[in-house]
Amino acid sequence: MTSAQGLHLKTIALIVIMISVAPLGDVFLGKGMKHLPPMASWAPGHLFHFFFGAFTTSAVWIGIGLLLAYFIAYLVVLSWADYSYVQPASSASYVLIALLAHFVLRETISPMRWLGVAVICTGVFVVGHTHPQTPEHHSW
Amino acid sequence: MVTQAILYILIVFVGTGGELCVSRAMKTIGEVTDFRPHAIARVVARSLALPRMWMGIALMSIAFFALLGMLSLAKVSFVFPSTALSYAAGALGGRYFLNERVTPQRWFGVLLVCVGVALVFLGKG
Figure 1 (tube, each protein chain N blue to C red):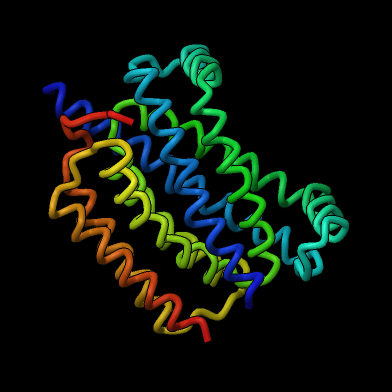
Figure 2 (tube, rainbow over the protein chains, first blue to last red):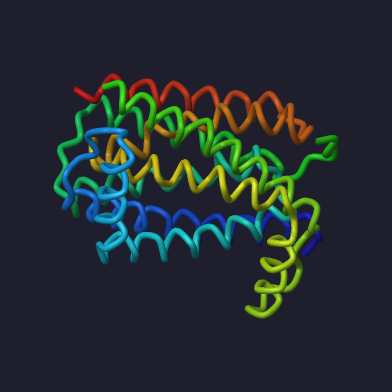
């Protein structure tokens, strides 16, 4: 196996981990936040109570734990792969989010929104067929 | 509606700014070749010594709080696909802040992602 193939394989492996863990985390966050009153104002007192409620909800913490696992995989893959490759490629997780929202959270998803998710995934597919690392780097 | 718009802007643009900072910090660390837990922990610890990593974490935290607010107001199946707009912001940031060479094919993919986001918005009602 060439080093380019190895690079591609380990990039794909980490992206697969990211797109599996992140949607689960997102759904747990959504489930937790649905148990709270909606954020109705930007007043500091209201925001404090709102976020206090959020961080005393167990589903929110499970979501945070899963998103933390996603974040570590994300950090590792960014150590060699381009941001402009990793970010769109990881958006494949949106299909899984839509499916979980529909089947687990029982949300109604309009045909237009399903079409939008499908188009997003097509975009991801196109991006996924570019090489993860380009030669020009970093003046910032 | 105004609250949702502000939260949306925070999620997309502040979140992307944070990710660009994190990406730049990780490129400073260099490619990770050892995947054993203690080696990954060492990489994370090294990254936390970089100011740009902390800037990224701060911006991403703001975006995360905004996300929690948004999730209390809108459906999961709307919130997450609609925030895919950050891919366009990310590709622009990758090109202009990180000097990554974004190929025409990658731009085309990003354009499709944007079209998909627009459809998700149109399907909100």
